[in-house]
Image 1 (tube, one colour):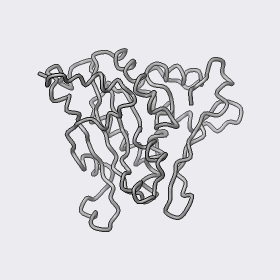
Image 2 (cartoon, helix red, strand yellow):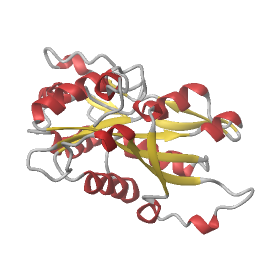
Image 3 (spheres, rainbow, N blue to C red):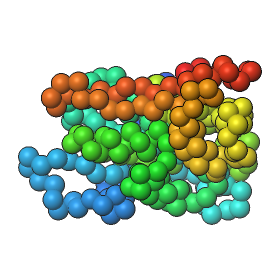
Image 4 (cartoon, one colour):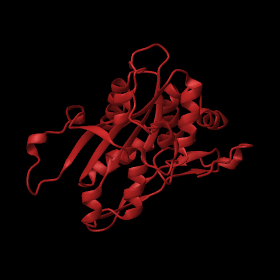
Length: 254
């Protein structure tokens, strides 16, 4: 049963309406242990860093969602709330907006398992743009909350990919932290780079390979980085693909 007039799928399909702003149930500290955070150390005057699991309310009104049925694909969102740091002038508006747009992904694995994998990539010094910016944010002594949210589930990969293509339009770097287009467009992009990738479950590894490439001849990714432009003042220098047009038909929008 859904409340009268409730149509969450329309809201989620609008890239201009940030999914993280919808009504949700919040679980603060849900991933703090995996991140190596000790909540007891945070007090008055101390730096504030935590994690937040956000479950959109529309999940509570779906009678067809079990989260375990075969073929279920999750679209999820990871972003960062740096409101405190922005109001204190430690983070500029453009950096805060990029972090708020964050990263959208698709997985056929259980949602919690996929989030644990992202947290592990953050801690292990692995991963791609999302994890690199996350580590630099963490190392820069900036107050932040990392927000991890399921968005929608779909019965087929094709449905999930089509939805991801839409939402990634709003989070594609430099606007957000997605390095490549969403859905099958991202897989085609990586294939044209010559990086093996057959489905979205292999994207993280493929992006690591692309970031590791430093050739001046073939297309490669110039990594984004957090820059302290004045003492205690931070911004994000956007990453970009270098020489992407060396491959016919490879014309990313970023």
